[in-house]
Every structure is written in C-alpha cells, then in structure tokens.
Picture 1 (cartoon, helix red, strand yellow):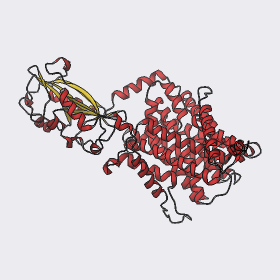
Picture 2 (picture 1 turned 90 degrees about the horizontal axis):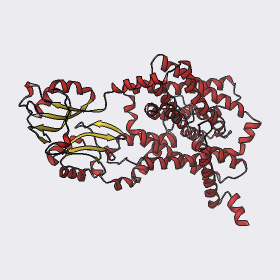
Picture 3 (picture 1 turned 180 degrees about the vertical axis):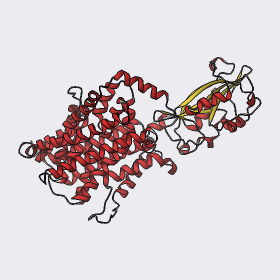
Picture 4 (picture 1 turned 135 degrees about the horizontal axis):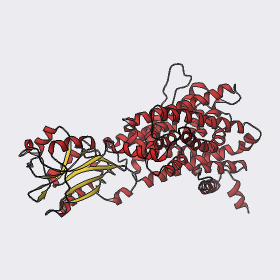
Length: 554
C-alpha cells in the first residue's frame, strides 16, 4: 500500500500534485453547478474544495503551488484582455462613457468603504486582509491574484489574504443580486415600461448599418455618376445593386444614375434620412426575382495577409465585381466604410453574381478549418511581453518601493493592446470563443485550486476562533453600500434603464452569477450589453487597485 500512501500524501510527488489538482478541480466544478434559489457560485467552488483539502493536510511543495497559481492567473487575465481588447477603447464613446463613469464610481466607493472599515477597526485587521476581503466582496479573482503578487514583492509573511476573500465571497454574490432587487423596489420599477423604453432607445441607435430600397426621383442627380453623387451628398454609403430598365447590376463609381432607377443602398443609420431625402422615395423591391439575381453572402476572413488591411485597399468592386455592404465583428454589424480595417475572424457581407462572390471568398479565405487552429504564437508572444512589462519597476516619488504591474497587470495591459492593435504588427489575435473560454477556465481553476490548497491549513481556525464572521460582515458592507449608492444615482439622475442598470451592477463587480440572474429576469440582451460595456475598464481598475493600495500603505 506504499504506492497509495505516496499518491495521497507525498508533497514532492508529481503524481500526488496532479492527482490533488484533478480531484479539487473536478469536485469543485461539479459542486459549482448546484443552484440555491437559482444562484450558483460556478468555478469559485474550486476554491472552497481546495480549502477543504488543505485543511486535511493534502498539499504540495510551496514553489510548485506558486508556479501553478501564477501560470493559471496569467492565462486567465491574458485571455480576458484578448477578448475585451477590441471593445476596450470604444466602450468610452457616447452612452458608454456614462456607464463607465458610474462603474468607476462603484470601484472607488468599494475601496473607500474597505479603507474606512480598516481605519475604524483600528488595526484589528491587517490591511492585506482587508484587501483580500475587498476582492471577495466584489467577486474579483484576478484582483486577488494581483494583490498576492504585490505582497510577494513586499515579502509579506502574514495570514493568507485568500482567507478574507473566501469568507466574503459567498455572501457577496447574494449581496450583488440583492442590491439589484432592492433598487427595483426602491423606485417601484415597472418591467413592462422599462421594456418599452428600451425598445424606444434601440430604435434611436445610430451605429448600426441601415438598408434602403430607393427609387431615383431627384432631377439634379439625373445623369450623374455614383462618384459625383457621393461627392455632392458628402455622406458615406454603399450602393449594393441598381435596377435600370428592368436590368439588375452592381454599380461602380462610374455608373450613371437616371430617374426611375431602383437602388439598394447600405449606410450608417445616422445618414439614412439625409440620403433618402436627397435621392428619392423608399420602395419595395424583390431583388431575387430580377433578371440577374444577385447572391448575398457572408464570407469569413481567415487569411492572415488580409489582417490589418483597409477595406478600400482591396478594391473588391473593380477587381472582383462585388460590393461589400457591411462587416460583422464579434457579433456586431459595422458599416463597410472604405477606411475600416479588416481583422481575421470578421464576417464580410458580399453582394454579386455567384462566380464573383466565389472569387472574393478565395481572396478572404473563408476557411473555418483555418480558424479552428489556435494562434499559439500570438498568445505566448503576448505573455512574454506582458511579463516583461509587469516586471518593469516604475518609481514614484515618496513611494518606498517601485510599482510593478505584476504577473496579472502586465499581461492584461499587453493583451488589451494586442487585441486592439495587434493587426498592425501582423499578429492574428482571433481565437474562437470556445478556445478563449477553455484557456480562461483552465487558468482560473488552476489559480483557485492553488489558492485554496495553500489557505486551507488556517481557514477553519480563522472562521471558528478568529475574525472570520467579522470578515463576512465587512465584505457584505463593501459589496452592498457602493452598489446601492451608485444604483440610486444612476437611476435618479442619469435615468439609466433598469435592464441596463442590472448589467452595470453585474459588470462593475465582474460577477457572472449576477449577470445570469439579470439575463433571466430581463429576457433581452440589455443586461449583457451593460455588462460588456463596463467590464473591460472595471477589470483593469480592479486588478491595479489592490496593488496600488498595498504598495502605498503597507
């Protein structure tokens, strides 16, 4: 039976460590699927199973646990950065600026409440433990990892801050969802009315491509070319098809428009009214029944040499006889502006005759199999430069220790930049959503299992004999107070739609269970839109905030 004893208890055995992680992760993930009142903790249960195993003495060598913990964290935050990178900077535009300002307010209030409790406790709870409670209260695991990285720079030897995180986390999930419900009852929100207002707002949105079927009625453009008309109107649009004397063709810049011609035009929604007023009245046309039926098809960009090229530079109309009307990127339709930069993974809507569309498909790639192959080079090049950036000491006057972004902040910043600008350096940043989620999940469960196993030795003693219940109470206050304050301000002064507000609250705490509850309650995508709008900035601020607090105050 020596083999079994070594497998279960030998902390230096590779088989023991892999066996332990496999057990902790598999049991934790299975338990995380259990719902209580419709709420589940998801993969966070891996942390609690790890704590349980650590409590009973199942552990591994410290340096191995640290390596697995940090590598898992790097994988997780880097994949998050790649995902949010393309939308990180655009999320500050228009209405997104208000939502991000409110989310930033929640982050600042979380920190203010946490530090206020620290000073009120008069040193009873150490600042690092308060930071651990803070991250449990906002259910932000990457921030916990970044804080632990900062503590390692400071050679901290106190109690594991994961204890505070573990104590605060479960009630925080309840507090976040409870705050959403309380705000609903404070303002006596009528969900049906909110739904109607949301539809009204969506109808006023200007960023989506708009399709027009027009008949030329304006005498002033009779006999003018498409290029001349575009110059006169001064607005960007694509004329996908033209029907002249019953004959359908794809116009080019030299095509002459005549009174009575029927046009299929794609433009941005903000330009639609002006274009329609200038050209002529809207009509109903069945383009498929014309003498030369055109094929309308989405083509997938999979060739790496197309990555980073402007749409206008590919000359689809003159070289291949097709028109590009819009581009779908990450589920959002974009108007096919000539200056739009294409990226691998984009879906391009092409209109033309069958053979011409096929030629365009060959140029763009249109190979799903090619996308199924992960771009490993981009991932590890990004991690390489992320760790380099994270290790770079940045000295500030008056600070005893130089600030470092660390193994969490560095890869996150680089991943966001690569996700947004990688195409300029010929880096293919596209990964399928399933591949991105797989890497993220592997990274986070490795991190949580490591943290739990390390913290398990002291957890029960902390809860039963120590300040565990105090940690729970502090965490609940850190969770609820900022959400209620900002939620009331958002509703009272900014008139934020309740469905969007639910997404804002879930996104500002980076809490998937709260988003799941919001989606289930709403039955529309407004909570998901609000969540994704504030998530990138919130995650960035959460990861950096704990490090800055610790480096400034410890």
